[in-house]
Image 1: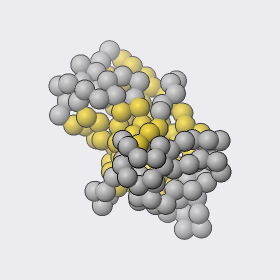
Image 2: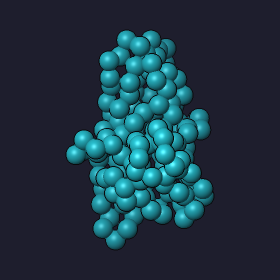
Image 3: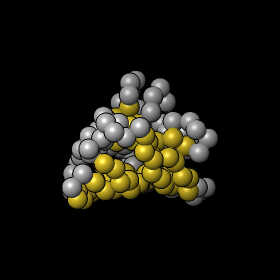
Image 4: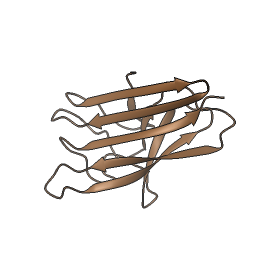
Length: 130
């Protein structure tokens, strides 16, 4: 396991509060499989919509990788019960991922849903470290 961080590129930073942010990984040589699970609590603050959310990875993405992608699931716990997919973006030389909604917009405090208590984000990605 590892403890991922959740930040914004700038602006008012989010804070997990009494929510849950957990990460799991397996490494086999240069390949890393990472799963991140984020659940908002009633004291979670979501930053502002100034910049994209970033979730840290346990290892830096290989410089040989132009860009890799995975899929994230975003669940709205409100009465709408929406389940939305987003693209997980990994960029060469970085140790974090960003998320982009199907519309192409970055995932932030109010895209693709307005985040609130009990909403979730989860994703699994596999990437190379060399």
